[in-house]
Length: 274
Length: 163
Image: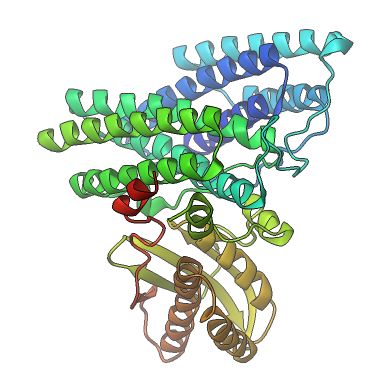
């Protein structure tokens, strides 16, 4: 397996880990898997930097990921198996030594979780119930929330990967700092929306990102379009906050809405540099 | 505008079938051995649908699509590609025209997003015919006459008035 193929495998492994964390209800196990997913994302970044240093192009192609499982134990076994597959692909380098060490620890942790029957819990993230906690949402409100979560969870994944690509392919320190902030913010939003999708029983892996989106050469135009999209996302948050008619959810969407405001500020900062 | 009206304007109804296509879009992504490709493009929003097909003996043997558009576009692409996969181009064109007629009564955003999917099929078939005549263009691109820009967003004033 060459490093470009390895990038795809690691990209898929990150998605498998992060979406497994969304799918699992137990907060402690969820946190553990989410921490692991953050480590795997850093691996992906270092691997991408290595590929760029060697002038090897990579893309965000991915095979179909079957993320639906019935129990937490099925997730642990699945993740152990996927990590073992990755472990067979690494060559010899300081980076690979680090990755191998991290992934061995992940396997040890997952195997330990497998030994305690209390950790074997039912998964409800795919039951399509579309009930959000104890909220009493009617059909229209539920549909509005469903559309919002599908739209925005994909969008956050797309933003993570597009800014990540720009960061790897850019050399400007100010710009890369802005990209990092935007990636970090989108990770948080993806986590929020992913967990909400799971609570609604409609968790799904985001679709593949079209290559034209992240290989755009006119970054300034991309940022200008991004500002318009952020304004759109703000509007969607405001609409949803009004539509769901629930104080707690409305506060959450207002919170996200204000975060989108600052994304616009960050993008404007980037445009000044471009 | 009431909250209920806002919710109605923002989203079409989510039926079980739509939810299924949202969670598992069919025929999404690249196609390795395509022999025609088309793009429908909305200049105002920069949104596009790329359609890829492998047509052999007038049968659409393989089909896939990609988009940077919204969930409505993905669902429309998933449903329509599934509908015409394995059928003849002639039948697919009939299905497309029937779909266009039905869409006249659909909510505006759904109609425009679905039209973009259907237009990308047209572009794909034009590219196929051109290739049959010896044209070597990799794809055929068509611009949308209408845009969904701003459609899902009620005017700010109206929201404020309601509040």
